[in-house]
Length: 187
Image (tube, rainbow, N blue to C red):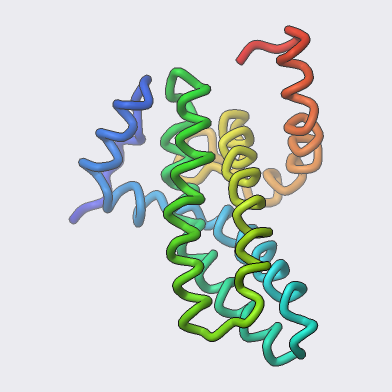
């Protein structure tokens, strides 16, 4: 199958779902988001390292390695899906879809992989990881709506430019709900 040169151009959540299901190779492979893959692999690998270190260095490195590999592969595809929703309306529904659906499918796979690997602290790690997934999925969408962490997009910037913007975006992300409550920003 050939790479599509047409970016996802949809205006509703339902149109995005239709596009994703009718163009899965484009969404998952050609638009694979390497920026999110790298960041997620490092952060998630760290979670597994520190939740397994009490079992010894070998257990911690093993769990970290499995999680890093899984997250690099999975997060690149998940972020591509998230990027597809960045301009979809209604924004609240797009955000809910990303916050719930992406972590749900991801953690079923994650739990299975760590069970097969024999990880003893997987339940503790999964709880931390689920919480992190919901927040990071919404943060990724928040950042993408502001032109950051994009790949294969006309608005894409360098990874270095994106990294420099992340601290400010993190602060904006934390205060955004408060600004919405007090009517200082639009959805």
